[in-house]
Amino acid sequence: MYFQELYIDPNPHHHELNPAIWDGDYMRTEVRHQLLKIAKNFIEFLEQPSIKLKDVTLSGSSAGYNYSEYSDMDLHLVVNTEELFTAEKIQYNNTYDLKIRGIPVELYVQPASQVHHSAGIYSVLDNKWLSKPEHVEPTVPARDIKAKARNYAGQINSAMRSGDLSKCKQAMDDLKRLRKAGLEANGEQSVENLAFKLLRARGQIEKLRKYIHKLESANLSLGEHNED
Image (cartoon, rainbow, N blue to C red; front, top):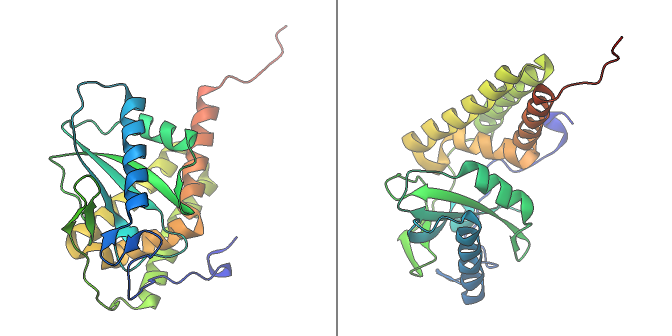
C-alpha cells in the first residue's frame, strides 16, 4: 500500500474530549476503574515487589482534543525506578488485547524523574488533571504534515528494501528521535509528532517494527543444510 492510497486526517481536532472516555472534563468512573485494574494487573505481571507505583496517568490524543478512530490510550505507570521494563511491556501488550470501549490501551513504564511531554496528562490514580489540554484550533498546515510523513515513509521503505537489520533499527531510532525533538520543541502540535502519528495510523511504524523482528529472528536462527 502506497502512502497516498489511504486518506487519514493528518491533524484531527474536536471541540470536546472523547465522550467514550470523558464526562465533560472528568474521566468516566467505569473507565477509570478499568484502567486502574489494568495498571494493577501489569504491576503484578512484572513481579517486582520493590517497585513503588507513584501514579497512573493517561496522556496523548485520548487526553486531548486531537483524538481519532486510530487513537489508543497511553497509560503510563509512574514508578520509583529508572528501569523502563521495555521487554516486559512489549510482552504484556502482545499477550493481552486490552481495549476500553473499543480503544486500544498501550502501557508504558515511566520513571518518576522522567519529564513526559503531552498537552493533556490526567492522573487516573488521583482522578484529576495534572496538565489540562487547551482547546486550540490546529495551526500546522496539513500539507506540511503530509510532506514530513512522506519523507519518513521514504526512509522506512529504503531501510526495508535494504534488508539490513542495522539500517532498519537506525530508521526506527531516527523516527523516535525526531518525534522526541519535535515534542520537546513544539509539543504535540509539532510537525514531527503529527507526521509520526500519521505514519502510525497508516501502519507504517508497525510494519517496520515487525520487519525488524523478522530480521532479528532470521539473524538468531540457523538454517538447515545437508551434511556429507
